[in-house]
Image 1 (cartoon, rainbow, N blue to C red):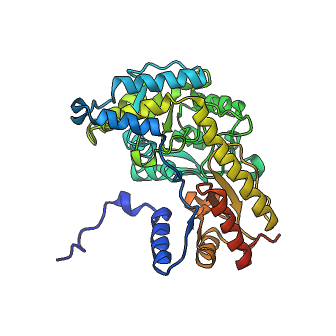
Image 2: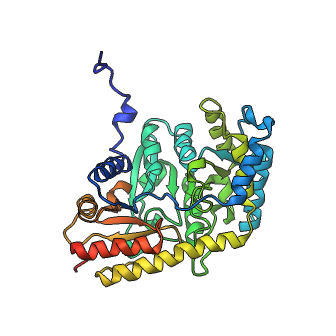
Image 3: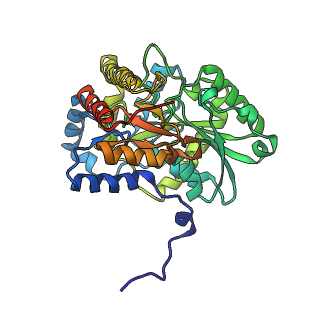
Length: 395
């Protein structure tokens, strides 16, 4: 018996196709055809989780006290570790009991925040291109997304002066993300001061995604929104352990900032989940306390890959900006090629997977995102395949 007469809710039908799911289908088909894929599509870090984190998880799992439901708001010790990490990294004081909330990964929290605070018809400001959860969460919640088209000549930064007063006065939330996925753009402290002043003027909730806080190179140190005076009054900041600590599959992150906004998200989550397995929270505590030598190893790994791939693409005609953070390169499509067509051509002719820029919104058209999630040997093989297939940038 089929259920063709039951249609999904409007909130699902309003969503555009999820490009990463489509990419997974194409990758599976390519593997069936015997292609040796070099997958530079998703932001899925390669390599193992650090051994001290694994050891902490094993020890915690052997404690029967961790096998029951965890506290809805996360364990007190993990919240303290989050607060201590923010104090150490940014000099930001947080109350671990009210200003920090563990999450089942930052994607879950970003989307649930939209459900907790956006009513149907509410106006939400979202950059384009952006991490898909930043605009898909508001759409699921029934919000009206106003895209802020980012421009390369402005360093892919939001220009708040270009937002009409009529739009700003209606806006309830602004999502943003620096260092940026997908562009790799970074924002100076002055930008954060400007966006806080803008949000305070128009009474807009700021939602900052600091997913790539520690994947920074060449002496660059990303700014936390909460470093800015007054930001905690109107903002929250999300973080994940997926990238820096190779814990993507563990599903652990957190949100910090305004206690009232965090309480609303906590209230929603008490109706939806039981929180993170306590043993994973113990492992996450260990990750946040790892010595900086580990962080430097991770940074060196991605910086080396960045330089290698930029140099190799340069020999094929591309002029790619040297990003100061994240694990991505934002690469122009050859003249006349659209994002989707170019990504499909690359996959079919070379077995190399890249993500079309329009997966991140209309502002990403004309680009592809390349993840630095393979070692230089595999990146070199990808470049050789490009050259053999005649794929290059010709201005």
